[in-house]
Amino acid sequence: MIVQDGVSVTLGTFDVLRPGIAGVLASTVSGLPGWWSTPDTKHDDQERSVGDGDFPSLRRYAARVLSIEGDVTARDPHSLGDFRNRLAGLLGSGPETLTVHGFFGPTQQATVYRDGGLQWELKSPVAARWQLPLKAPDPRKYGLSEYREAARSG
Image (cartoon, rainbow, N blue to C red):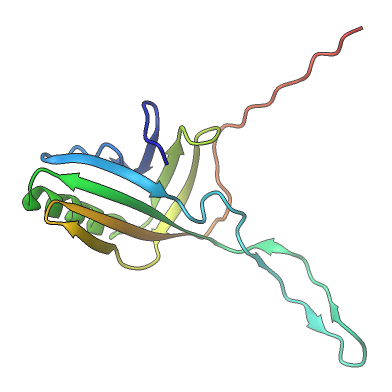
């Protein structure tokens, strides 16, 4: 993803792209797998014991499983550690609101919980690639939608 003015990915009050941590030179989001796709479906089909196929049941969305993937570069290893510790501490005491603004349409948000530990891969003493797995029990994303009505000519 290309980071530009007006774009943000925030967890609670922490903006991943602008972390506000002294010594962090650049922070980017390289992916949001699971955010843009449709959640899995869940159902309770019953097998037809004396016939072909199943008796279908209602289809519902399962929880949305997603992650935030990013890269960070810092001035020194200490600042890189401060960023890592801040990420590792997110969502430790419960859910937060994930807000994605400025990517491909309107601002959207969802309530997310942590769905695993922070994955951290050092690329150098002052750079790392990371991934934070999340789960949104309510699979819907909320936010403003923009509707336009087409004008008809006479």
